[in-house]
View 1 (cartoon, rainbow, N blue to C red):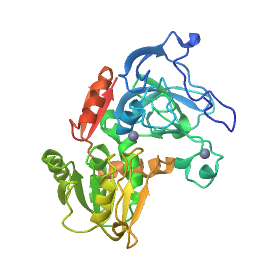
View 2: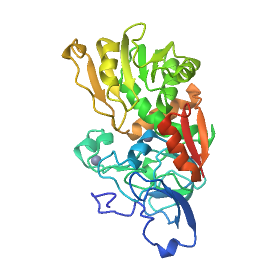
View 3: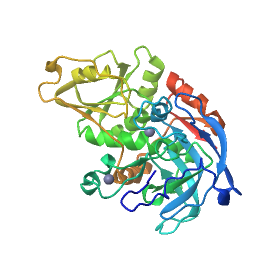
View 4: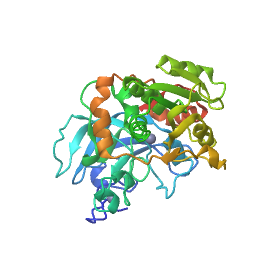
Length: 354
Ligand SMILES: [Zn+2]
Ligand SMILES: [Zn+2]
């Protein structure tokens, strides 16, 4: 696979599944998806040196995102198998390739879903690199962070500073960043609905409150525990997704991957209100009467992130004092973490620790 088709550079996306005799002396361990819809396998792989514009990062923590379930389930187009999932990586640089500027050995960085963009396609040129025609996505088309070590394009890594633990910061790298992009696209409305109160919503509820908004949290019907969790984070109201909020919303973000929520959210927003679908994958949206979209309600989706999203969000995240609720699992228990996420067995976010 070519990492950078504009230059013919294929060095950046590690292919650790091929023998690399030179690197054999240092092994790394990873949980590898070798076949779609099967359990990840604990695997020892060579720990290669970073190439030009790359860094090698010793993983301190890696968040478990719902997108990882979509990867394992084969729900995303053009899967790369075998693959090491994981795109909420926090770690420390332990090797630096040529042509890397501004990063130091030992520095703590975050590596997000957006692993690389081409820089030359129309979307990159118009500063919408989240829509790049030739992107590489960490943990999907390039090996990610369910590992003791990973290689990343240095230009797409975010310096994280020293405030907060690796585990606490990991969910910010996707749930936080994609959530932030969704929040910006939702507009400035004061009354904000969040459908699906998991990793992303529990962070965005804190951001929205800090911005002076009122949060209305929608969970699976009857999930009073998660509704209580939402209230504990400052939600003005929490209820089931089958309920209407006590007042019309200015905007709603759908973090759950359930297409049935789209018509419900459209009915919950006021005239001119906006509904943002934040996920990369969603079950089919049922047909609905035009009148619930009418009156200039808007329905949009969010795709990926730009580096500017990361700079913006991670820049003021310490100021907000975001508290992430995390459940840690040893790296070897990645399959259990994915199963628990699928079943909704924890509040907040799961994080793997090598
Ligand atoms: Zn591009
Ligand atoms: Zn994600």
